[in-house]
Amino acid sequence: MDRDSLERELGTVFGGTEQARRVVARQARDLADAGKIEAELGFELTVDAVIDNLEDAPDDYGLAERWNWWLDSLELSHGGYNRFRVRPDAVEE
Image 1 (cartoon, rainbow, N blue to C red):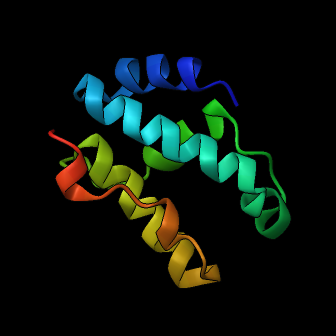
Image 2 (cartoon, rainbow, N blue to C red):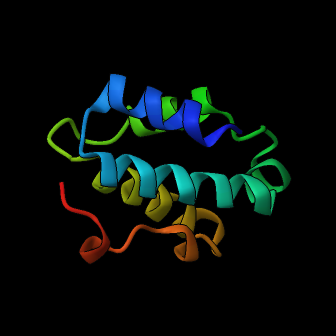
């Protein structure tokens, strides 16, 4: 997954600060590199896959909140996803 493409698409779809887009894209890239999504859920983590999953979060959530909402769901269902969460103090939304 290309981090720059994800950052651009996150901005287009969700807005958010440059910092939030950069941090979420970095975490998404780390998650893709880990191969957990493909191994456990059977699909490649692409820009479109990230956007699709973040769109399911509550509408009033900011970008980092959306990312953490999705990661919390993955943590509950499969475990091992907390390390990819975005720390709230690391992002200004």
